[in-house]
Length: 104
Length: 172
Image 1 (cartoon, rainbow over the protein chains, first blue to last red):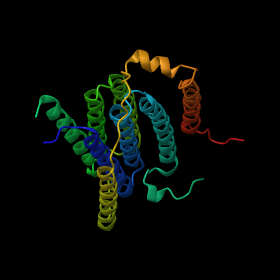
Image 2 (image 1 turned 90 degrees about the vertical axis):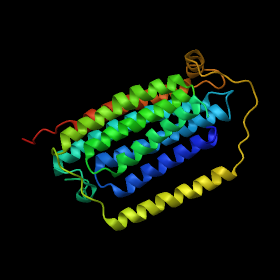
Image 3 (image 1 turned 90 degrees about the horizontal axis):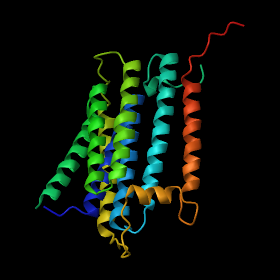
Image 4 (image 1 turned 30 degrees about the horizontal axis):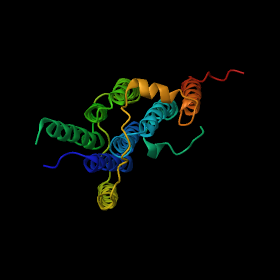
């Protein structure tokens, strides 16, 4: 087995990104689509941290990007869940196929 | 093959395995729990890379915050014991194909590329260094993005309240 390094972490983050993309393509429920987006954002964070650790250990820029991405992802999840609950209240379903009209 | 390598591959298997189960299982609550384990695996990878602060932030924000939010919204919107509809087989095949092709494309590019590491002296990611640079106003300081993100969080907070507010029945 290989010694883990940058390439192994890049493999994990790429695989996680495309797992999230697969979920985003196949799922039709808004909450599960939101979960897939969270996986994608996490793979990006992992990438930033890996580049920060292995390529530019003299700087902390990747770490700050990760912190800001986490903050924005939290805000995004909160807004998305508010929209989902509002949609459920008006349509009684959170399936994207049944949410064709934006205004009711 | 030492302990660190074994732990790394265990964490990788935990992250990828539970991530894969989170997007394929048909029970939405299990999906949320598998997402939780995947996020814990990523936090473990941060610990493995010795970025303890980011790992702690990951556990607090993702595992403690976002997953709980998702579980609450599942309780609010889903009937108990109801399974998700099975995706169409054609969509499943083409999504898997698209994901696999994208993965293969990116991995071939990554493996061909030769990364050059910077040879300067390493700056350890301790909380002191992070705090000094995060709130620094001199060159390389991150105080402006910090303030912008705090405004964004405030706006998102107010926006959530406005969106999720139960609209009053129009009586006039």
